[in-house]
Length: 112
Length: 114
Image: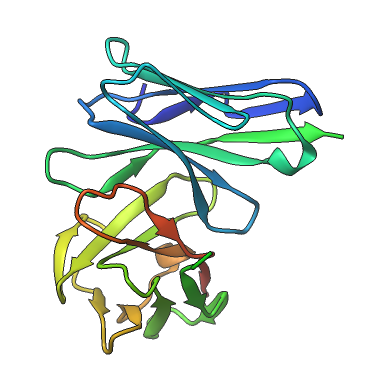
């Protein structure tokens, strides 16, 4: 798969359910970030996980990172209609570079 | 919470015209970026700017593009002669300091080239 690919591309769930999105990448990373984009809006930083971390929590968000598989997952628990957005993983391109490489994103729809 | 402000929110222009997209980064931030997102595609890095000069730029950022920080608050992206394929949402972003990895993005300028 291409660098920074998320799957699924689209996900539709009922309010209250959990949503899991996955991301794969190709290069070595120092950290991986997740961003949210509401329709027609800018990107909002959600959470950052470092390469020496395996799991991180922030409120209803849980991120995991498996550097051996070059993959990460974002879990949103007890989803709400307001969580409807596109979610992107992103990482910096290389040592000393602050060029963020984004995946194509997962479009999450939470149905009330 | 402080935010990155972009103007205009929408810009329509004719092919071959020059456009300037404007951004006001968060006031104490030091690093500034432009990204773009063509409809249905990934968010792509264009350029980073620090200490009044370009730090990095992508292949997309060719001679038709330029950036400027004309004063202490504004950060602009100029496209000299727009092409149809420049139509995209352009995002400005800023970062506060060395070692901070979180980017703050503006809401974007939707550029339509006709």
